[in-house]
Structure formats: structure tokens, C-alpha cells
Amino acid sequence: MLSMDAGAIYLDYAATTPVDPAVGDAMAGYLTAEGSFANPSSIHPLGRQAAAAAETAREQLANLLNVSPCDLIWTSGATESVNLGLKGAARFRSNRGKHLITMPIEHKAAIGAFAALEHEGFDVSYLMPDADGLLATDALEAAIRDDTQLVSVMHVNNETGVIQDIGSIGECCRRKDVLLHVDAAQSVGKLPLDLAELPVDLLSLTAHKFYGPKGIGALYIADRSACQVEALLHGGGQERRLRPGTLPVHQIVGLGTAASIAESRQAEDLEHLHRLNERLWAGVKEIDGVLRNGNADRSFPGILNLSIEGIEGESLLLALESLSVGTGSACNSTSHESSHVLRALGRDDALAQSAIRFSFGRETTMDEIDAAIRCYTDAVSHLRAISPAYRKTA
Amino acid sequence: MSADRESGPYSQLVRRYFANPVHSGELPEKYNVGVVGEAAESEAGARVVLSAVVDEGRIRVLRYQVFGCPHLIAATEAFCDEAEGKALTALTEFDVPTLMSSLAIPIEKTGRLFILEDAAKALHISMTGTKED
Image 1 (tube, each protein chain N blue to C red):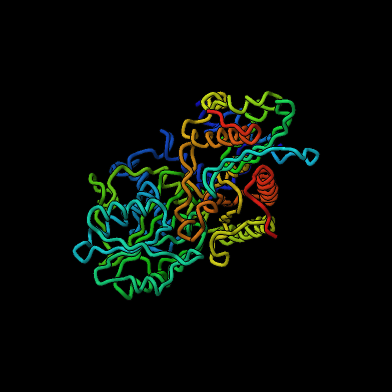
Image 2 (cartoon, helix red, strand yellow):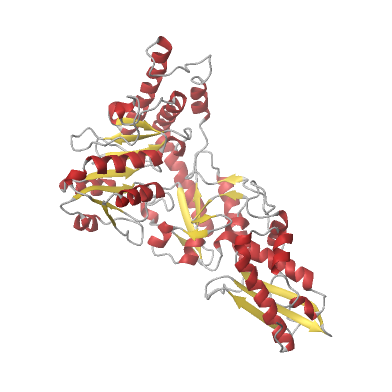
């Protein structure tokens, strides 16, 4: 009988991370009457105290990215940052051209923003990645036209973990005088990211992917005359009028604290993730029909995405219920649509539906990885024993 | 649908049958006179294979193989559990809405359950050579 101890092991850190206890403690000081709860736009002492905390957090994030604090705009998270960055820049520069470039393996936040821009009359080119999920710079260069004004790519793909070569892509964009937006929701706080060195114009991030709170993110806007964005919201003068609204100081403090912690332990975290990833892959790679999605040599070690032959995706997910893992599909009771990312990488529908995304974090232990290996192996055996569809070919 | 928010789209009965498919597999080798009924959604889609040993008009042993979602696996297990030991007519008296209701299977999965119904009818035809309307 299959063991189904629901959700006992959390391996879905790419979806969200738990708030670091130090982050929670820092946030608590900005919520109640005993703390600095005041509106940071107020000019009285308590307001100034709250504003100072928000600016300290901005400096902490700026230090992590090696940028100037004034280049960072607070948002509600990566989806808003992506929308502000893409729509804001495209609309601001629309007199220079209406051609935009992205990839079909982007997060739906970007795909949705581009769809909205297409509706407004922009022309969007979706460049296919190679089989490893990477964008070839020569393909990008060939796709850039005289009327191209913006390119957007993810740094780390949220499903496969594949890392795009932002340096080469950015250099290509600079040569052609085209803006580059990077969706870095999966990489900020996890991978070294030096924006003083990288030719990036706009960068979106969110706190909850690196042990900060949900509901807070930021958009980096490079201090270049060519790089300006139009606001999506209108109201007060907060955030250089680009993102009006009362600043959620407790969340901003949480993001800043998380950024500061990430900066201090990034190397240690990465080494830990490498060990976990290698252990899991070593434990499952001999299972007949198992396939790794994405280029292993160019992937963030915190994500391991597996497809498997002869297994129905929804059943695999239920059989793995003792693990909290991500799936390669938008799975619910009414639909089991396969991943647009994996389909774009050339996986057929059945393989894309069987995809499971394992993602690890600071708290993940080797014992949990070993349990995940056992669980995955048992689930595959269980379903293949029932199935008429799978016959081992070896 | 009785499944609550925390248990998702799967009722406790669906979970129990899915995790404990005692009628799954092919017929044991000692039965060399089994008959088979099969139905599939498409070449690569959901598939149900039923195999049975019949003696004096009764289904003595009923086994299945399924490639499909948890609801289809659970429904097939429940069907085999219910039909084994009964008269052949159990195969044609199969009722999709009743089974869906008893297992709290969401209405969106109705199409999948008809694959099981088709397999049961195919098994009946294999046994009797007659098609039930």
C-alpha cells in the first residue's frame, strides 16, 4: 500500500520560502503601537522613523545587488515589478518603436504583460530556446530590428532552474541600443548578481523567494537617460511617483533584512543546494525512463525538474503527496494543462505532464532528500505496477 | 463534490482506493482462460484494461490495469471490488453517475469514467459475444 502522509516534506522553495525568523522579528517592530507603525510619508517624528527604516531596507537591498538605493522602487512583488517594468518602459518609449522580444518559457507574469502590450498594438517576438532552455545570443541579435526597444528574459527559470547568460544577452542589447529587463525572482538572494557589472536596465524581484515576506518586491531601474518607465498607478508621490501608495514598512523591513541575510550567507547556501541537488539526482537517475529537464551544467542548484516516461502526471502528484513539490502543469480538479515551459523545450505532452519540480532551501536536510528519493521511487513503482502503458524497453 | 479545501479534489474514498489497488495487475498465471476488455481515450491517453475469469456465469476473478488520473484508478478499483463475485450482468449494469457520486468524483472527470464503462462493456462482449444496448 502506498504511503500518503500529506505534505510532510517541503521541497517547493521555488514557489515560496518560509520567512527567516530574524526577518519575522524585524518586521514585528513595525506593526503595533509599541513599534514604528506610522505612515512613512508623514513628517512627524514617528513617520520619519518609519521612513528611515524603509530607506535602511532599500540600502540593504542595494548592497545585495550592488546598485544605488535610489534605483530601487518598492512594489507588491515580482508580478507587479514585471508589469511596471515591461509596460512602463514599453509605453514610455513607444515613440521609438513598438517591437519587443521575449521567450515563450517566461513566467506567466511576463507572458501576460506582453499579451496586454500586444493588445495595445505592440509587436512581440517570442524566441524559442534551445533544447537546454537557453537563449542563443546570435538568435537574439538576429531578431533585434530597428524598431525593437526592449528585451525581457528570466535570469533563472522558475520551472527548470536554467540560468540565462544575462551578461551576453545584456551586451547584445546595449550594442543595439535596446533595453533589457530581467525577471530575477528566482535568483535574487540566491545567486551572485552584481548589477554594477551586468548590462541590465530593469530587474524585477520579490522577497518571498529568499526568506522574506510575501507581498513585497522591487523593481530596479538603471540610472540611464534611456531607461525610464511610465507609472501604472496614479496617486501620491511615493516611489518617485512611479508606484504611489502607502509604503508597507513592515514588509519593506522584512525584505531588507532578508537581503542582508542573503548577502552574508549566499556562498554557504549555494554549496548546500549543490549537495542536495547532487544527492537527489544520484538517487533517481537510475530509474528507468527518468529525464532531467533543463541543462544540468547551466542550472540553479536549488531546482531539479524531472519528467518520467509512462507515468500519468496527476497520479504521480497524488502518489507523491508526502512531498510538497511543484508540478509541471497547472493541475487542479478541472484541468491538467501541461507546462508551457517544458513544451517549449520539446517535451511531449505526456512527459511535460509527468514533470515534478523539486526545489530546496536552507532548511532542507539530506534525510529529507533521501526520503524524497524513496517516495519518488515507490510512487513510480506503484503506478507502473497498475499501468498497462509502460513496458521497460531495456 | 465532497472533497474539502484541504484534501483538494480527492475524497477520502478516492485516496483509499488509489493507495490500495488490490485488484490491479494481470490475471495470475494459474488462470489461463481469462478474457479481456479494453478501452482507451487515445493512443497516448487514459487507458483501462479489464481481465476476468468467469465460471458458471459469475465473475470469479476481476483484475485491471489503468493509465490515468487518480479518479480513474480509484473508480476502476471500486468497480472491480464491487463486481468481483457477481453475475456477468454486473458489467452492463455499471452506472457512471452512481459511481461518481459514491466516490465524490468531480463532474469534470465524467469523460474519464466513461473509459471504464467502455472497458466493462468490451469485457462483457468478449465473454458473451453479444452487445448490450
